[in-house]
Image (cartoon, rainbow, N blue to C red; front, top):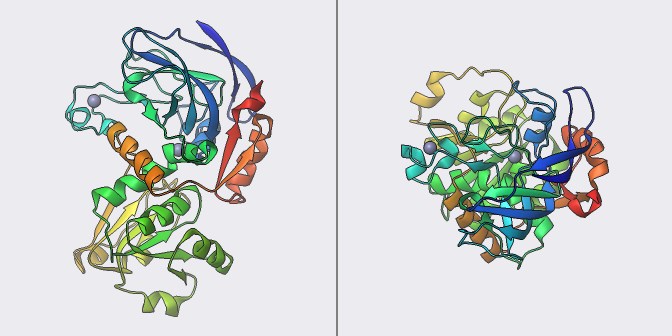
Length: 348
Ligand SMILES: [Zn+2]
Ligand SMILES: [Zn+2]
């Protein structure tokens, strides 16, 4: 065992604080990574505060991890000491179910091991995330990261990037498609950038006029206010795709009405309560309401390579680890452009 520094929440109602964590010694197929940067995802907050239930305390959040390889196991072939690497939302899976066989480990039928607040495949060892100085991960779940882009801006790609890239690829978003993004936060701003890079004509739908300038700066072609009823009427049957990133309660029906025939609305956010959907909105235009969860390891590598090639990174605000509790409050208030990233050097 190796004692490493980290930040943990010890209960749902306490702020995160310094915590000494034991990491395993790298096994034959393991990589030990010194973490340079870790993004702050909304899921971190939900988990630290037990808002989804099932949090095992103390919990060390963080699943947008970029760092350098410091040690490798004797059978590791993919990486060497000094390589720049990333770790995303999960660190292992069963490896033999249908979904694992098809490189969709995020949908592992036997339960994948998430990066934190989860169990490894032995079904007893608890995982701890990226708010720590080092992490040990089996090599198959470690991603190769190009040094071409600023690494702190690459970190959020490991969750926000792949969460938006995967559905855009799966539903084959292409040049000329009309695509709308709902919610301009960590996920939404990546959806705008990646969809625009694929050639889609991107519209940001927002309740607040103040987001118009932001939307344009991110590369959106259009901006539409959803609070204006006449405007929403005019937008009926407009879009081939809607990427809905909102995690607060909202009415899906309003947005479904904006889809063209055969249009697809993809849910990426997780509102706290179930929603009512009027069947007519789906039947009336053969529309689809679908969801998507991050992406597999192979696709995450493809996304990282794609972003390096197309110069796509996240817009970030850097913080030191001792600012994490304040960053949570600001994230909840929507007061961040668009992702906090922790400089892990501040842990020492
Ligand atoms: Zn996340
Ligand atoms: Zn599996």
